[in-house]
Length: 409
Image 1 (tube, rainbow, N blue to C red):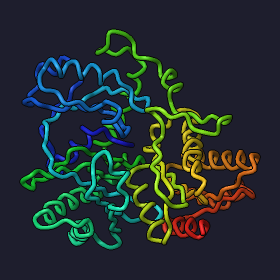
Image 2 (image 1 turned 120 degrees about the horizontal axis):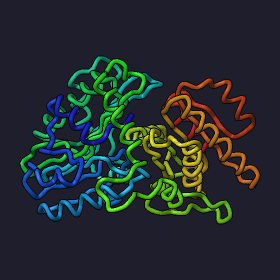
Image 3 (image 1 turned 180 degrees about the vertical axis):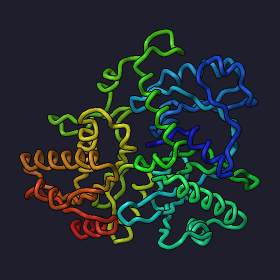
Image 4 (image 1 turned 60 degrees about the vertical axis):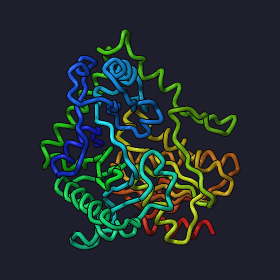
C-alpha cells in the first residue's frame, strides 16, 4: 500500500525528519483560510510518480492564483487517478537535491539503503550516481555514514544526511514498511536539510500490527470510491475512467511500436544489451546496480511503479506486456531481466504476461531470453507452466543479475 505524500510526511514528522510547513486542502474553500504565507506550492496527492511533468504541482503567489491552480489540479487525472486531497506547502529554495531510500529485499530478507547526489525528477536518468548499502547485520549509524561517504558527501553534510537516513531506517523498522523514500532531500545554501517529497509503502501483511496505517488504507479505499462520484470542485462531472484508458499507452501489433503519450510507461535508454523491467524506483535502481556489479551493461529500463494501481482485471498483465515490448525495441537487447516484487496474485499476472509475450514473439519468429525473478512463487509449477519458453527463473536479485549477464554474452 502506497501512502500519499501528506500521509508519508505525517510519519516523517513523528520521526523528527524535517519537513516544510504544510496544510491539507480538501476543497477550494480551504485556500481562503490558508495559514502558510505565500508563495506556496500546491501538490496533487496521488500515488503515481511524475506529478510535476503531468502538471500536478504548481507554484502560486496569491489566493486568486491558488484557487485557479487548485481547481485545475483537482480535475487533472494522473495515471487514471484524480486527487481527493491537495497539499499546500511552503516554497523552499534548494541549492542541491539528493535521493535517499530504505527498501526491503524480501528474498534476501534484508533492508537496503540507497542514495544519490542527483535527486528530483531526473533521478532515474542518473543511475551511475546511485549508491547502495545492504544492512546485513544489526543496524548501526555506521551503515548510514557509509552510504553518505559512498555518495561523495563532505563536511557537515555527512552528519546531517546520515541522521536523516538513520531516522528513515527507524521508521522503516518500527512500521514494518517495504519502502521509505525521500526524493528530493533539499539542501539549502546554508547546508540545512529538508524532505521536500516523500513516499512510504506499507506492507499489507503487517497492517494488523499497525492500526494507524490500516486506517490510512481505509481512507484510500473511500477516496477511490469517491472518484466515481461528481467532483465538488468542478463545474461538471469528471470523465469516466474508461475515457482515460483510451488515452493510455497501448501496443499496436500491426506497427510493432508503442503508442506514446503522457500516460505511457517511460523507457530510459542506456547503451548496453540487457533490458530491465521492474516496479518501483528503489528496486529499479538496485537492479541496475546489481547488473553493473556483475559486469553487465543495461540497455534500458522501464519502471512500472506501484503494482497497487493495477487493480482492474488484466490491467497489470497488459501493462507488463507493454513494458516488455518497450525494453525489447532496442535490437541490441539480448536478454530482458524482469524483477518484480508483489503479492502472489500480482506474480501470476506477470507470469501470464511473460508467457503471452514470448509465445507471440515465437509466432513472429523472434526469440529473446527472459530472466524472471518473482517472490512467493512455486518455482516448479512456474517452470512447468512456462514449458519450453526461453525463461530462466531466479530466486534472488544477485542470481537474476548474474544469469542475465551470462545470457547476454
